[in-house]
Image: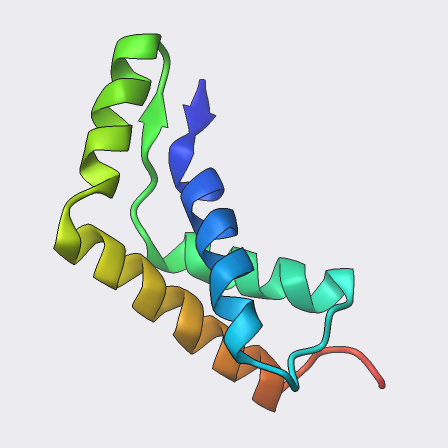
Length: 87
């Protein structure tokens, strides 16, 4: 069983972070961003190859992609403004 949303959020984060030159690159900040996103987005679990294909098809829907990008962007901005570690 796998939550495909984890992979989608991670891939989206990797592309979105390139737009933020002030973003801390430590593991704590990265994990905070990913956790925030996964708590806000619906999980996409699958248990078979057929389920994985269905989930991948969902990825291509425009509104789905917009929601993920928006959620990742908001999380990045929150963590940049309020990091939970000491610089």
